Amino acid sequence: MHPRIFTLILLLLALAGVGCREGDPSPIDDTPYALQLPPGFPYPDIPEDNALTVARVALGKRLFYDPILSADSTISCASCHLPALAFADDAPISPGVGRRLGLRNAPTLANVAYLTLVNKDGGVPKLDLQALVPIEDHNEMDLSILSAALRLNAHPDYLEAFQRAYGEEASPFTITRALAAFLRILISGDSPYDRYEQGKGSLSESAKRGSALFFSERAQCSSCHSGFNFTDNGFHNNGLYDTYADPGRMRATFLPEDEGKFRVPTLRNIALTAPYMHDGSLPGLEAVIAHYNSGGSQHPNKDERIRPLGLSEMEKADLLAFLQALTDSTFIANPEFLPE
Ligand code: HEC
Ligand code: HEC
Image (cartoon, rainbow, N blue to C red; front, side):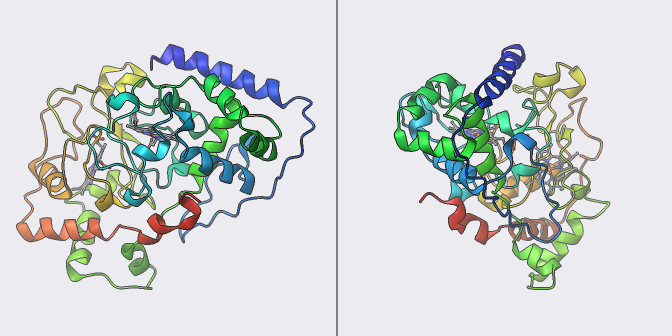
Protein backbone atom coordinates (compact mmCIF):
# COMPACT_ATOMS: atom_id res chain seq x y z
CA MET A 1 0.00 0.00 0.00
CA HIS A 2 1.23 3.51 -0.78
CA PRO A 3 2.39 5.22 2.45
CA ARG A 4 0.28 8.33 1.78
CA ILE A 5 -2.91 6.28 1.46
CA PHE A 6 -1.91 4.48 4.61
CA THR A 7 -1.54 7.76 6.53
CA LEU A 8 -5.01 8.76 5.38
CA ILE A 9 -6.42 5.51 6.65
CA LEU A 10 -4.67 6.00 9.98
CA LEU A 11 -6.41 9.35 10.31
CA LEU A 12 -9.74 7.81 9.42
CA LEU A 13 -9.26 5.08 11.99
CA ALA A 14 -8.36 7.57 14.69
CA LEU A 15 -11.53 9.50 13.89
CA ALA A 16 -13.66 6.38 13.84
CA GLY A 17 -12.30 5.51 17.27
CA VAL A 18 -13.08 8.86 18.84
CA GLY A 19 -16.49 9.21 17.17
CA CYS A 20 -17.93 5.89 18.22
CA ARG A 21 -16.84 5.87 21.82
CA GLU A 22 -18.84 8.92 22.78
CA GLY A 23 -22.03 8.43 24.75
CA ASP A 24 -22.57 4.72 24.15
CA PRO A 25 -24.20 3.24 27.22
CA SER A 26 -23.65 -0.48 26.41
CA PRO A 27 -22.12 -2.49 29.24
CA ILE A 28 -18.53 -3.57 28.74
CA ASP A 29 -17.17 -6.77 30.26
CA ASP A 30 -13.75 -5.55 31.37
CA THR A 31 -12.51 -8.73 33.09
CA PRO A 32 -8.73 -8.48 32.56
CA TYR A 33 -6.94 -11.18 30.59
CA ALA A 34 -4.07 -12.69 32.60
CA LEU A 35 -1.17 -12.90 30.18
CA GLN A 36 1.11 -15.88 30.89
CA LEU A 37 4.77 -14.93 30.42
CA PRO A 38 7.75 -17.29 30.42
CA PRO A 39 10.73 -16.47 32.70
CA GLY A 40 12.77 -13.56 31.33
CA PHE A 41 9.97 -12.13 29.17
CA PRO A 42 9.09 -8.50 30.00
CA TYR A 43 5.44 -7.46 30.14
CA PRO A 44 4.70 -6.10 26.63
CA ASP A 45 3.55 -2.50 26.08
CA ILE A 46 -0.21 -2.50 25.70
CA PRO A 47 -1.89 0.70 24.49
CA GLU A 48 -4.29 2.37 26.91
CA ASP A 49 -7.14 2.30 24.42
CA ASN A 50 -6.91 -1.49 24.06
CA ALA A 51 -6.36 -2.97 27.53
CA LEU A 52 -6.26 -6.78 27.34
CA THR A 53 -9.60 -8.24 28.46
CA VAL A 54 -11.04 -11.72 28.19
CA ALA A 55 -13.87 -10.42 25.97
CA ARG A 56 -11.50 -8.67 23.54
CA VAL A 57 -9.17 -11.66 23.24
CA ALA A 58 -12.12 -14.01 22.62
CA LEU A 59 -13.56 -11.70 19.96
CA GLY A 60 -10.15 -11.29 18.29
CA LYS A 61 -9.67 -15.05 18.21
CA ARG A 62 -13.06 -15.55 16.58
CA LEU A 63 -12.24 -12.92 13.93
CA PHE A 64 -8.80 -14.45 13.33
CA TYR A 65 -10.28 -17.79 12.29
CA ASP A 66 -13.32 -16.40 10.42
CA PRO A 67 -13.18 -16.06 6.59
CA ILE A 68 -15.91 -13.41 6.88
CA LEU A 69 -13.10 -10.82 6.74
CA SER A 70 -12.27 -11.68 3.09
CA ALA A 71 -14.07 -10.50 -0.06
CA ASP A 72 -15.42 -13.94 -1.06
CA SER A 73 -15.38 -15.41 2.48
CA THR A 74 -12.69 -17.97 1.58
CA ILE A 75 -9.62 -16.64 3.40
CA SER A 76 -9.11 -16.07 7.11
CA CYS A 77 -6.03 -14.80 8.90
CA ALA A 78 -5.32 -18.44 9.76
CA SER A 79 -5.18 -19.39 6.05
CA CYS A 80 -1.69 -17.84 5.96
CA HIS A 81 -0.85 -17.97 9.67
CA LEU A 82 -1.35 -21.65 10.56
CA PRO A 83 -1.28 -22.53 14.29
CA ALA A 84 0.56 -25.83 13.68
CA LEU A 85 3.33 -23.89 11.88
CA ALA A 86 3.73 -21.37 14.73
CA PHE A 87 1.25 -19.14 12.87
CA ALA A 88 3.39 -19.00 9.70
CA ASP A 89 2.86 -20.81 6.37
CA ASP A 90 4.89 -23.39 4.44
CA ALA A 91 4.40 -21.72 1.03
CA PRO A 92 7.05 -19.19 -0.04
CA ILE A 93 4.19 -16.78 -0.82
CA SER A 94 0.71 -17.60 0.55
CA PRO A 95 -2.21 -17.23 -1.85
CA GLY A 96 -4.98 -14.82 -0.88
CA VAL A 97 -8.44 -14.26 -2.37
CA GLY A 98 -8.68 -15.65 -5.95
CA ARG A 99 -5.33 -17.45 -5.33
CA ARG A 100 -3.58 -14.12 -5.93
CA LEU A 101 -0.01 -13.88 -4.66
CA GLY A 102 1.47 -11.02 -2.66
CA LEU A 103 5.06 -10.00 -2.16
CA ARG A 104 6.37 -11.70 0.95
CA ASN A 105 6.57 -14.88 3.00
CA ALA A 106 4.04 -15.07 5.86
CA PRO A 107 5.93 -14.74 9.16
CA THR A 108 5.28 -16.41 12.51
CA LEU A 109 2.98 -14.45 14.82
CA ALA A 110 4.74 -15.70 17.96
CA ASN A 111 5.63 -12.80 20.25
CA VAL A 112 4.32 -10.06 17.93
CA ALA A 113 3.25 -8.32 21.16
CA TYR A 114 6.87 -7.16 21.39
CA LEU A 115 7.17 -5.63 17.91
CA THR A 116 8.05 -1.96 17.89
CA LEU A 117 7.46 -1.65 14.13
CA VAL A 118 5.29 -4.16 12.31
CA ASN A 119 5.93 -6.00 9.01
CA LYS A 120 9.29 -6.88 7.55
CA ASP A 121 9.89 -3.31 6.37
CA GLY A 122 8.55 -1.75 9.59
CA GLY A 123 5.94 0.06 7.49
CA VAL A 124 3.17 -0.23 10.09
CA PRO A 125 3.75 1.75 13.31
CA LYS A 126 1.72 -0.39 15.71
CA LEU A 127 0.16 -3.79 16.07
CA ASP A 128 -3.28 -2.29 16.65
CA LEU A 129 -3.35 -1.08 13.03
CA GLN A 130 -1.71 -4.06 11.32
CA ALA A 131 -4.88 -6.04 10.55
CA LEU A 132 -5.98 -3.31 8.20
CA VAL A 133 -3.21 -4.29 5.77
CA PRO A 134 -4.24 -7.92 5.08
CA ILE A 135 -7.98 -7.20 5.22
CA GLU A 136 -7.77 -4.43 2.60
CA ASP A 137 -4.87 -5.80 0.50
CA HIS A 138 -6.07 -6.87 -2.98
CA ASN A 139 -3.78 -9.94 -2.85
CA GLU A 140 -4.77 -11.01 0.65
CA MET A 141 -8.38 -10.61 1.88
CA ASP A 142 -9.45 -7.80 -0.47
CA LEU A 143 -12.29 -6.40 1.64
CA SER A 144 -12.73 -2.77 2.63
CA ILE A 145 -12.68 -2.46 6.40
CA LEU A 146 -15.99 -0.58 6.27
CA SER A 147 -17.64 -3.50 4.41
CA ALA A 148 -16.17 -5.83 7.02
CA ALA A 149 -17.81 -3.76 9.76
CA LEU A 150 -21.19 -3.83 7.95
CA ARG A 151 -20.98 -7.60 7.55
CA LEU A 152 -20.11 -8.18 11.20
CA ASN A 153 -22.81 -5.86 12.50
CA ALA A 154 -25.38 -7.82 10.49
CA HIS A 155 -24.66 -10.81 12.76
CA PRO A 156 -26.43 -10.30 16.11
CA ASP A 157 -23.93 -12.44 18.01
CA TYR A 158 -20.93 -10.57 16.58
CA LEU A 159 -22.66 -7.27 17.36
CA GLU A 160 -23.17 -8.41 20.93
CA ALA A 161 -19.57 -9.61 21.24
CA PHE A 162 -18.28 -6.22 20.03
CA GLN A 163 -20.56 -4.44 22.52
CA ARG A 164 -19.28 -6.63 25.34
CA ALA A 165 -15.65 -6.11 24.37
CA TYR A 166 -15.65 -2.41 23.49
CA GLY A 167 -19.11 -1.01 24.25
CA GLU A 168 -19.47 -0.27 20.53
CA GLU A 169 -20.39 -2.01 17.33
CA ALA A 170 -17.87 -3.39 14.82
CA SER A 171 -15.90 -0.53 13.23
CA PRO A 172 -12.43 -0.09 11.74
CA PHE A 173 -11.31 0.83 15.25
CA THR A 174 -12.80 -2.14 17.11
CA ILE A 175 -12.05 -4.79 14.43
CA THR A 176 -8.35 -3.94 14.35
CA ARG A 177 -8.16 -3.62 18.16
CA ALA A 178 -9.82 -6.98 18.81
CA LEU A 179 -7.46 -8.75 16.39
CA ALA A 180 -4.47 -7.09 18.09
CA ALA A 181 -5.75 -8.23 21.51
CA PHE A 182 -5.70 -11.84 20.30
CA LEU A 183 -2.29 -11.44 18.64
CA ARG A 184 -0.82 -10.16 21.92
CA ILE A 185 -1.52 -13.40 23.77
CA LEU A 186 0.46 -15.49 21.24
CA ILE A 187 3.50 -15.70 23.51
CA SER A 188 6.09 -18.42 22.94
CA GLY A 189 9.08 -19.13 25.18
CA ASP A 190 8.97 -22.77 26.27
CA SER A 191 11.43 -24.59 24.00
CA PRO A 192 13.94 -27.29 24.98
CA TYR A 193 16.60 -24.55 24.84
CA ASP A 194 14.65 -22.41 27.37
CA ARG A 195 14.08 -25.37 29.66
CA TYR A 196 17.77 -26.24 29.52
CA GLU A 197 18.71 -22.63 30.35
CA GLN A 198 16.32 -22.71 33.30
CA GLY A 199 17.91 -25.93 34.58
CA LYS A 200 14.72 -27.90 33.87
CA GLY A 201 15.72 -30.04 30.91
CA SER A 202 18.53 -31.40 28.80
CA LEU A 203 19.97 -30.53 25.42
CA SER A 204 22.02 -32.74 23.09
CA GLU A 205 25.79 -32.15 23.07
CA SER A 206 25.48 -31.04 19.45
CA ALA A 207 22.81 -28.41 20.30
CA LYS A 208 24.99 -27.16 23.19
CA ARG A 209 27.94 -26.70 20.83
CA GLY A 210 25.59 -25.02 18.34
CA SER A 211 24.43 -22.64 21.06
CA ALA A 212 28.03 -21.69 21.89
CA LEU A 213 28.66 -21.03 18.20
CA PHE A 214 25.46 -19.02 17.79
CA PHE A 215 26.45 -16.72 20.68
CA SER A 216 30.13 -16.51 19.62
CA GLU A 217 32.12 -13.52 18.34
CA ARG A 218 33.01 -15.65 15.37
CA ALA A 219 29.51 -16.40 14.07
CA GLN A 220 27.91 -13.14 15.30
CA CYS A 221 24.36 -14.59 14.98
CA SER A 222 23.32 -13.32 18.41
CA SER A 223 24.41 -9.75 17.73
CA CYS A 224 21.36 -9.38 15.45
CA HIS A 225 19.23 -12.27 16.73
CA SER A 226 19.59 -11.05 20.33
CA GLY A 227 17.69 -11.12 23.61
CA PHE A 228 14.75 -13.19 24.82
CA ASN A 229 13.07 -13.12 21.40
CA PHE A 230 16.24 -13.58 19.30
CA THR A 231 15.91 -10.21 17.58
CA ASP A 232 17.29 -6.72 18.10
CA ASN A 233 14.11 -5.45 16.35
CA GLY A 234 16.45 -3.58 13.99
CA PHE A 235 16.64 -3.57 10.19
CA HIS A 236 19.69 -5.06 8.51
CA ASN A 237 20.79 -6.28 5.09
CA ASN A 238 21.93 -9.88 5.56
CA GLY A 239 23.42 -10.20 2.10
CA LEU A 240 20.78 -12.30 0.42
CA TYR A 241 21.01 -10.61 -3.01
CA ASP A 242 23.22 -8.38 -5.15
CA THR A 243 20.03 -6.68 -6.38
CA TYR A 244 16.78 -6.77 -4.43
CA ALA A 245 13.39 -7.10 -6.18
CA ASP A 246 11.86 -6.14 -2.81
CA PRO A 247 13.60 -3.02 -1.44
CA GLY A 248 12.64 -3.90 2.17
CA ARG A 249 12.95 -1.08 4.69
CA MET A 250 13.49 1.40 1.82
CA ARG A 251 9.86 0.83 0.87
CA ALA A 252 8.87 2.60 4.09
CA THR A 253 11.66 5.19 4.40
CA PHE A 254 12.58 5.88 0.71
CA LEU A 255 16.25 6.03 1.83
CA PRO A 256 18.74 4.24 -0.47
CA GLU A 257 20.80 3.18 2.56
CA ASP A 258 17.79 1.10 3.65
CA GLU A 259 17.63 -0.96 0.46
CA GLY A 260 17.59 -4.69 1.16
CA LYS A 261 17.21 -4.20 4.91
CA PHE A 262 14.56 -6.28 6.66
CA ARG A 263 13.54 -6.52 10.30
CA VAL A 264 15.53 -9.21 12.09
CA PRO A 265 13.03 -12.05 12.59
CA THR A 266 12.65 -13.99 15.81
CA LEU A 267 14.22 -17.45 15.64
CA ARG A 268 11.71 -18.97 18.05
CA ASN A 269 9.99 -21.99 16.41
CA ILE A 270 12.24 -21.49 13.40
CA ALA A 271 12.22 -25.22 12.49
CA LEU A 272 8.44 -24.92 11.94
CA THR A 273 8.41 -21.86 9.70
CA ALA A 274 10.22 -22.88 6.49
CA PRO A 275 10.73 -21.53 3.87
CA TYR A 276 12.90 -18.65 5.05
CA MET A 277 13.74 -14.97 4.44
CA HIS A 278 11.40 -12.18 3.32
CA ASP A 279 10.55 -13.92 0.05
CA GLY A 280 10.64 -17.51 1.27
CA SER A 281 13.54 -18.17 -1.12
CA LEU A 282 15.58 -20.45 1.18
CA PRO A 283 13.81 -23.81 1.51
CA GLY A 284 15.31 -25.08 4.77
CA LEU A 285 17.61 -24.33 7.69
CA GLU A 286 20.52 -26.09 5.94
CA ALA A 287 20.20 -23.51 3.14
CA VAL A 288 20.11 -20.67 5.69
CA ILE A 289 23.28 -21.93 7.36
CA ALA A 290 24.96 -22.35 3.95
CA HIS A 291 23.98 -18.76 3.13
CA TYR A 292 25.58 -17.32 6.27
CA ASN A 293 28.62 -19.56 5.90
CA SER A 294 29.19 -18.25 2.36
CA GLY A 295 29.30 -14.61 3.49
CA GLY A 296 26.42 -13.59 1.23
CA SER A 297 26.18 -11.10 -1.62
CA GLN A 298 28.18 -8.01 -2.55
CA HIS A 299 25.35 -5.53 -1.89
CA PRO A 300 26.71 -2.15 -0.68
CA ASN A 301 24.29 -2.16 2.29
CA LYS A 302 25.31 -5.64 3.43
CA ASP A 303 26.03 -5.63 7.15
CA GLU A 304 29.74 -6.09 7.91
CA ARG A 305 28.94 -8.98 10.27
CA ILE A 306 27.86 -11.07 7.27
CA ARG A 307 31.14 -12.53 5.98
CA PRO A 308 32.49 -16.03 5.21
CA LEU A 309 32.50 -18.08 8.43
CA GLY A 310 34.46 -21.17 7.40
CA LEU A 311 32.20 -23.54 9.37
CA SER A 312 33.10 -27.24 9.40
CA GLU A 313 30.46 -29.87 8.60
CA MET A 314 30.16 -30.60 12.30
CA GLU A 315 29.70 -26.92 13.16
CA LYS A 316 26.93 -26.62 10.57
CA ALA A 317 25.19 -29.66 12.07
CA ASP A 318 25.60 -28.18 15.57
CA LEU A 319 24.09 -24.86 14.56
CA LEU A 320 21.17 -26.74 13.00
CA ALA A 321 20.65 -28.76 16.21
CA PHE A 322 20.58 -25.51 18.21
CA LEU A 323 18.01 -23.90 15.89
CA GLN A 324 15.88 -27.05 16.12
CA ALA A 325 15.96 -26.78 19.92
CA LEU A 326 14.02 -23.49 19.68
CA THR A 327 10.71 -25.22 18.86
CA ASP A 328 8.04 -24.64 21.51
CA SER A 329 5.63 -27.56 21.25
CA THR A 330 3.35 -26.24 24.00
CA PHE A 331 2.86 -23.03 21.99
CA ILE A 332 1.43 -24.72 18.91
CA ALA A 333 -0.86 -26.96 20.98
CA ASN A 334 -2.19 -24.30 23.38
CA PRO A 335 -6.02 -24.52 23.28
CA GLU A 336 -6.24 -20.80 24.17
CA PHE A 337 -4.84 -20.05 20.72
CA LEU A 338 -6.83 -22.62 18.71
CA PRO A 339 -10.35 -22.28 17.28
CA GLU A 340 -13.20 -23.40 19.56
C1 HEC B 1 -2.74 -14.08 2.09
C2 HEC B 1 -1.94 -14.37 3.26
C3 HEC B 1 -2.18 -13.58 4.53
C4 HEC B 1 -3.36 -13.35 5.19
C5 HEC B 1 -4.76 -13.77 4.77
C6 HEC B 1 -3.02 -12.65 6.40
N1 HEC B 1 -1.68 -12.44 6.47
FE1 HEC B 1 -0.67 -11.58 8.01
N2 HEC B 1 1.00 -11.58 6.90
C7 HEC B 1 1.14 -12.14 5.64
C8 HEC B 1 2.41 -11.74 5.07
C9 HEC B 1 2.95 -12.13 3.71
C10 HEC B 1 3.03 -10.89 6.03
C11 HEC B 1 4.36 -10.15 5.90
C12 HEC B 1 4.01 -8.76 5.38
C13 HEC B 1 5.19 -7.82 5.32
O1 HEC B 1 6.13 -8.00 6.08
O2 HEC B 1 5.14 -6.91 4.51
C14 HEC B 1 2.11 -10.82 7.17
C15 HEC B 1 2.39 -10.10 8.32
C16 HEC B 1 1.56 -10.09 9.43
C17 HEC B 1 1.89 -9.49 10.72
C18 HEC B 1 3.19 -8.80 11.06
C19 HEC B 1 4.18 -9.76 11.62
C20 HEC B 1 5.56 -9.18 11.72
O3 HEC B 1 6.46 -9.95 12.10
O4 HEC B 1 5.78 -8.00 11.43
C21 HEC B 1 0.80 -9.65 11.54
C22 HEC B 1 0.68 -9.19 12.97
C23 HEC B 1 -0.22 -10.33 10.75
N3 HEC B 1 0.29 -10.60 9.49
C24 HEC B 1 -1.49 -10.62 11.19
C25 HEC B 1 -2.52 -10.99 10.33
C26 HEC B 1 -3.93 -10.93 10.68
C27 HEC B 1 -4.50 -10.48 12.02
C28 HEC B 1 -4.63 -11.34 9.59
C29 HEC B 1 -6.13 -11.41 9.39
C30 HEC B 1 -6.83 -10.15 9.52
C31 HEC B 1 -3.63 -11.69 8.57
N4 HEC B 1 -2.38 -11.44 9.05
C32 HEC B 1 -3.95 -12.22 7.33
C33 HEC B 1 0.23 -12.96 5.02
C34 HEC B 1 -1.12 -12.99 5.35
C1 HEC C 1 23.53 -8.41 10.52
C2 HEC C 1 22.45 -9.01 11.27
C3 HEC C 1 22.31 -10.53 11.19
C4 HEC C 1 23.23 -11.50 11.53
C5 HEC C 1 24.65 -11.31 12.00
C6 HEC C 1 22.56 -12.77 11.36
N1 HEC C 1 21.27 -12.58 10.91
FE1 HEC C 1 19.91 -14.01 10.56
N2 HEC C 1 18.66 -12.62 9.76
C7 HEC C 1 18.88 -11.25 9.72
C8 HEC C 1 17.85 -10.62 8.95
C9 HEC C 1 17.72 -9.12 8.68
C10 HEC C 1 17.00 -11.64 8.51
C11 HEC C 1 15.75 -11.48 7.62
C12 HEC C 1 16.15 -11.34 6.16
C13 HEC C 1 14.99 -11.37 5.21
O1 HEC C 1 13.84 -11.31 5.66
O2 HEC C 1 15.22 -11.46 4.01
C14 HEC C 1 17.53 -12.88 9.04
C15 HEC C 1 16.97 -14.14 8.85
C16 HEC C 1 17.42 -15.31 9.43
C17 HEC C 1 16.72 -16.57 9.39
C18 HEC C 1 15.40 -16.81 8.67
C19 HEC C 1 14.25 -16.32 9.53
C20 HEC C 1 12.91 -16.42 8.87
O3 HEC C 1 11.92 -16.41 9.62
O4 HEC C 1 12.82 -16.45 7.63
C21 HEC C 1 17.45 -17.47 10.12
C22 HEC C 1 17.11 -18.92 10.39
C23 HEC C 1 18.63 -16.77 10.59
N3 HEC C 1 18.58 -15.46 10.15
C24 HEC C 1 19.64 -17.35 11.34
C25 HEC C 1 20.87 -16.72 11.58
C26 HEC C 1 22.05 -17.41 12.02
C27 HEC C 1 22.14 -18.88 12.36
C28 HEC C 1 23.05 -16.48 12.06
C29 HEC C 1 24.51 -16.67 12.38
C30 HEC C 1 25.21 -17.59 11.50
C31 HEC C 1 22.46 -15.20 11.65
N4 HEC C 1 21.15 -15.40 11.35
C32 HEC C 1 23.14 -14.00 11.61
C33 HEC C 1 19.94 -10.61 10.33
C34 HEC C 1 21.09 -11.22 10.78
